[in-house]
Image (cartoon, rainbow, N blue to C red; front, side, top):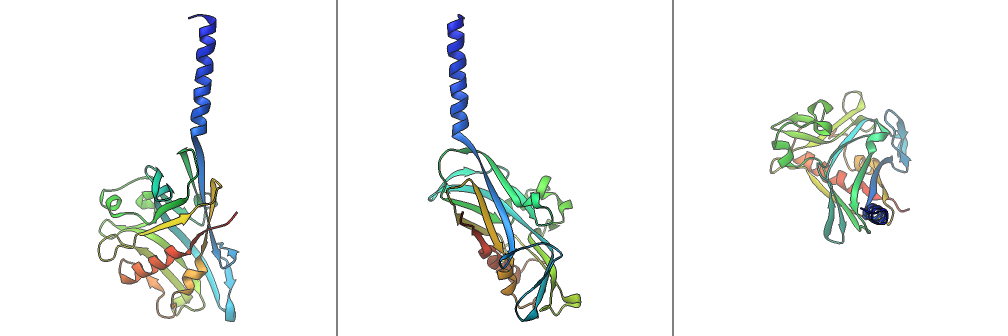
Length: 232
């Protein structure tokens, strides 16, 4: 191979690598839980209207099956897409996506929870590891959303509330599909007003849900409505 040929080959390889880099870029979903207009922090007492108070000690939820769409067409589906988000660790509130096709996406779609096929296929590691404290039993499946704390409205002992929402068997499958519009930025902030959700519950009569059932499905449906993409 002559020197000139070698130079041409090297240039072509560099151009090819640069083109590939342009065709693939990163994307990140950032989840930001709030109590009304205030960022949610665990073990912090928030004073609400009429001197009511609320405090969250645990807030965890599963996001899975992440897809990016252009209108109604899926252009990217994250492989092995299972994420346990946990307010106790800021690093666990971000979902980075890599090896994306170039171009603009119009929507993001994902599940709130873990689907039945994954649940019945057996034990998993990573965010699905049972030691994460989000699996009831193989019969009941994963806890999709875990929210614990105290509220002055609760009539339970010590004013506590516990909501472990899940279930994958009909008629109490609590898995929710969420679709949100995307801005032009590839770093997307998703706000969650947890106060809106907790205000939809009569804590005087409903303060503990610890197994699949009709109420778990209803509260999961309501929780799915608090996700909003923040304007940039």
